[in-house]
Image 1 (tube, helix red, strand yellow):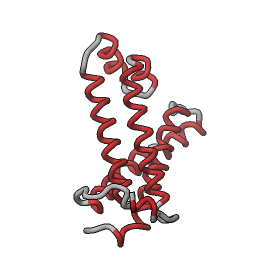
Image 2 (cartoon, one colour; image 1 turned 135 degrees about the vertical axis):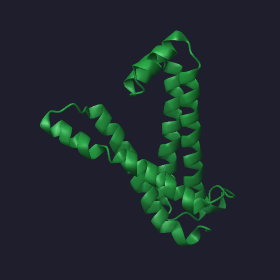
Image 3 (cartoon, rainbow, N blue to C red; image 1 turned 180 degrees about the vertical axis):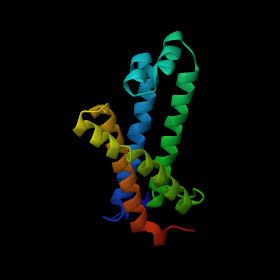
Length: 152
């Protein structure tokens, strides 16, 4: 907690990125509880929704793994500002997490073009991409602020 007490404006982007990752992890756990309609709404596809409807364990397991991964991303964000200590390879892990979110967020560009031109893009998909882009930008900003303080 000492890192949190000493947090300054340079720590804020990584803290916000961590909070977003935790919120996304909780959302994925909620999707498991809501079942097939949530899988359809959030874009997991008809096959995943059908499996969930049939009572298969596979959609829940895969979604729980995504939630666990998002929780690990949050832990690394918090480690980047010193709230959590002892996680290995903070620089490369934060770089990788940042890249994943930015790559996912880049889908917003063609989706925005599709929305403007009346193509197949939906506002829902565009908003999901914007959340990923925002999270990636927060990771990038926070990592740039804290790079020299992270052990290699």
